[in-house]
Image (cartoon, rainbow, N blue to C red; front, top):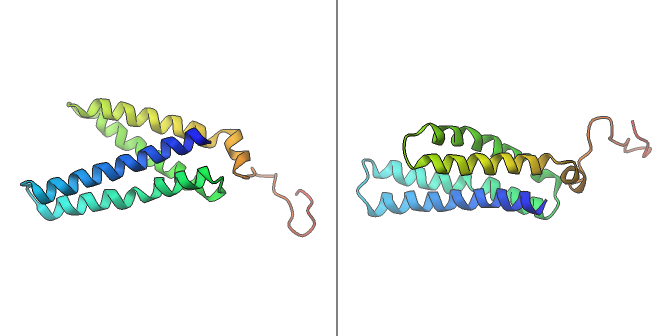
Length: 134
């Protein structure tokens, strides 16, 4: 679970760094549209909250954290695909993002992680009134 949290947190940090980079370039550089650059940078930094909170929840073994962590990985896969379609230096970034997203997904849905988070599968829920399994 620690590895899953580390990968999800790494993705969140990458979003923060990317957002700051776009924001700084938008403010100090000569972008085509300064407002769009600033908005893009701020948006990336806000989007970073989802994986960062999920990573913190995974470290704290909070069951709610699995959903945001999985959503983050599912959102990362199309981004990685688009990076892989580029004809530039973005291809290594796409490979790294795809590998990270797949590895994180495998770790997040792993049976041990599921048990550590206290998530029960269908048919394994206990009846809250009697403590008897349904």
